[in-house]
Amino acid sequence: MIPRYARPAMTKIWEPENKFRIWFEIEAHAMDAQAKLGVIPAAAAKAVWERGKWEVERIDEIERETKHDVIAFLTNLAEHVGPEARFVHQGMTSSDVLDTCFSVQLVQATDILLKDLDDVLTALKRRALEHKMTVTMGRSHGIHAEPVTIGLKFASFYAEFARNKQRLEVARAEIATCAISGAVGTFANIDPFVEEHVAAKLGLAIEPVSTQVIPRDRHAAYFATLGVIASSIERIATEIRHLQRTEVREAEEYFSPGQKGSSAMPHKRNPVLTENLTGLARVIRGYVVPAMENVALWHERDISHSSVERYIGPDATITLDFALARLAGVIDKLVIYTDAVERNLNQMGGLVFSQRVLLALTQAGVSREDAYVFTQRNAMKVWNGGGTLLDHLKADADVTAKIKPQDIEALFDMGYHTKHVDTIFKRVFGAS
Image 1 (tube, rainbow, N blue to C red):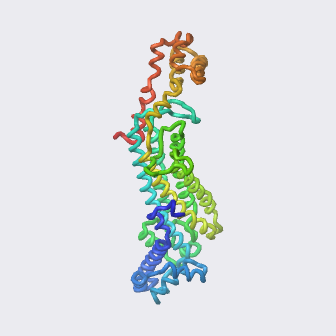
Image 2: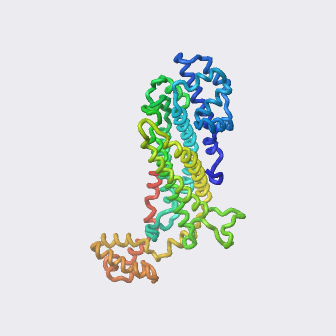
Image 3: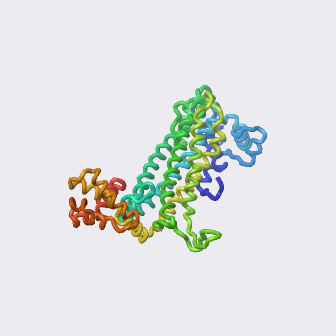
């Protein structure tokens, strides 16, 4: 991933130094287990812990000759350990190291992503409570529908991201497995105790049937979860982008002092952050299909998945980490223009109360079909630019024959649409 969309803590997980550190720990812990079983001398395991070193540049140099990254690492490790290095990797295969390491890296990355989600949730909850009763225009198909509150918008996003956190926690548990089972996964040359020991030391579960590689349905589910989170990011980003349009201007990304919106038009204040988030969401979702296609490997293993994962592991997690951090900042500093919110709410002359009028007419004994006709014909007068719905209804003999003018006025009460906001908030945030 390019530095522009990367943060240091997540990037470090995917750097060679961290990868080789994990490889070393897998090999060294496996040697401890082998020593306990009496397969290798305890002194050999101790020597690896004491003298084990490696150099990224040297490993790369060896790999250019061997064309095998794990062998290059083991060769470099042996250069530091000495004769005891002959006991390293006893009964193991490369996938034992690579797959278990990948699990550790994904777990490390997920722990950062979970913290990122907490930051997003905190920002969403704060803004939801802040604007709990700020009434705004709800829209369906992009057209004015009925009133909602800005707080309800944020509460909806909060509930969605709470689900995303639960999904990611499940995905973390599913991906956190260890495979130290040897060639074709039969444990023919290594005792299952070694796998159990390494898994415990690394905080992983054992893979029940590894077939030499950890089954890739786990990884497919993991990257699919990242894709869902990315889609949720885009949902919020799209909402903000629409609300920032000049014709709406109910919300706006924070515009810092000295910030420039356009190289040509000095007046511009564009939703660049949420547009950026929309693009990053597309990239993250793009990694889901390759992860799905990695599930079907040949027989007990092949490496068609390997090149894919070298891309999507770092890129998907690094990009999502950046996107979540950016999203939390956007939400936290989002500017709400309440004057514009109120102006848009009143823009259509009370048409937002049409359903309540329709229902009141049916309650007064009018058939639903006639009630719809009475209400719609008056609404269309307003739609075409004339007067208010209330005035037209009070002048309609068919309507006033069933509902008194003062009772019609009572139908145009904004509080009618917010009476259950508390109930929804309790469902989302709890009784507190």
